[in-house]
Image 1: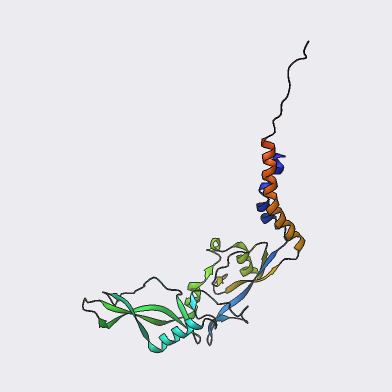
Image 2: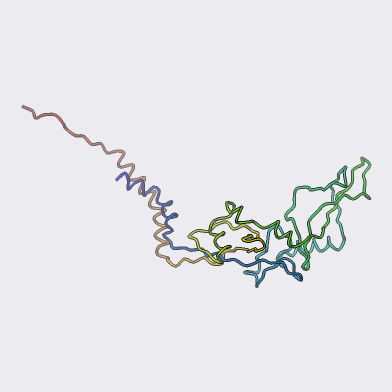
Length: 240
């Protein structure tokens, strides 16, 4: 009875491990390439309208309207002033709040950078820092933002690595997918996304949910009853 009580207490964990509901998650890959006309892009149609290539590449989906508008404005104006100043305008500068490392506009890739404006100097001698975009090679940018599954696989869930290498993979639970391409070869990149979630066993789902709720309560009740039971065994001789 004590074993039964223990199993009921840990039933939520057992339901999760056994996947009694039958839910499966399918992950698929889409190849990412560098095209002379389109820059960093999907080799085929995007798996979904909001499937950005990388969170490290601004404006990598058409829906990123605000980012694209700002970066296009910056590109057409060369620089945009900030309220940050430095005493060494020649040194590389990073204010540490970059949302992304690169920007892709009209098939060209740019490095998000900050430059010292020597023409704007305050009375204390400090120079203003301006926002700027520096052209960079698309192949270098893609390699920089990607994760090499051969050397950094510990950062990526195994099912995602399998999908990147094999084309598709399934799991009985959802995992966190890196929001950037995965490099599986010297110059081979794939973006892995969750493409479907199937729950074919509704009865199993209800049973698993019920067991997760009722099981611990029943386990506590049985444990309470067992704690109040006392066994007395008489081992003396017969009275004469």
